[in-house]
Amino acid sequence: MRMRPTLSWTPTQDLPPATADLGPVVDALSTGGVLVLSGAGISTESGIPDYRGEGGSLSRHTPMTYQDFIASAQARRRYWARSHLGWRTFGRARPNAGHRAVAAFGDHGLLSGVITQNVDGLHEAAGSENAVELHGSLDRVVCLSCGASSPRHELAARLEEANEGFGPVAAAINPDGDADLTDGQVGDFRVMSCTVCDGVLKPDVVFFGEAVPPQRVERCRELVREATSLLVLGSSLTVMSGLRFVRQAAKTGKPVLIVNRDPTRGDLHAVTRVALPLGRALTAVAGRLGVPVGDETAERTG
Image 1 (cartoon, helix red, strand yellow):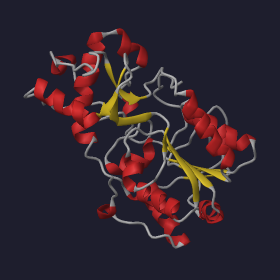
Image 2 (cartoon, rainbow, N blue to C red):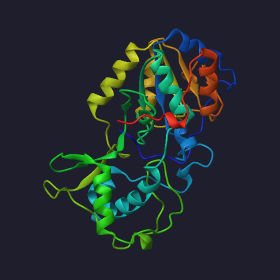
Image 3 (cartoon, rainbow, N blue to C red):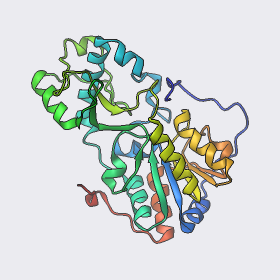
Image 4 (cartoon, helix red, strand yellow):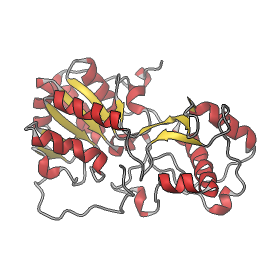
């Protein structure tokens, strides 16, 4: 279950010091069989903010919980108004050097898989095949009554038509694609229902307070079992949905390597934490391995 996020995580004991030495990451990848676990920090260079890093949004924004969403029509109105506005910006985000480096590592047979906590679809857009989206993806919508799934762009078109002229200025866009709007800005925003059964629509993402589907968790556990090491990229590991895989890897003696600017909840299980910007760090790692990383014009579609 994704728990309601806290504003910060404070270490309760001394953590190993961070380093700028990328050698252990290079060594792990050169061996192959590395499983990547990515978090919001890998997408900040694509213009999508982090929750807890420098300038993180949790100081001003509490993400919608599953319980709030299903309990109140007004909460759903607020969510969809904010999410619809955020989608206009969020949906235009493109993979950055970090995403492209991960895809390149996969192309060269250095990875056993990719798990991402992000809902932005940028790993897939960069070319990482079969990445497990632990918390789902914002580019899909699901009906809570009949289970019908549909592309987000179809709902966006319906919302545009039903809310012509809706375009308030948001204070910020958050990692979950939610824009910061006041209730006054939300106004009487019209929410769309399922075209199949008229049921309640929800983005196909795991809200805070909602459980990750068990089969998805088991798939991730299987990937950890198959990997030679676990490389965590841009995650504070504050929520258990990601931390459990770090603990699993460490318990079975698999090296855990973390690239994240700030301390993480998994540092005590890691053999190293590299405190460098991800795009720069992963591009440098790729260079040392002789792995070419494409530029933004090489983004893959379809």
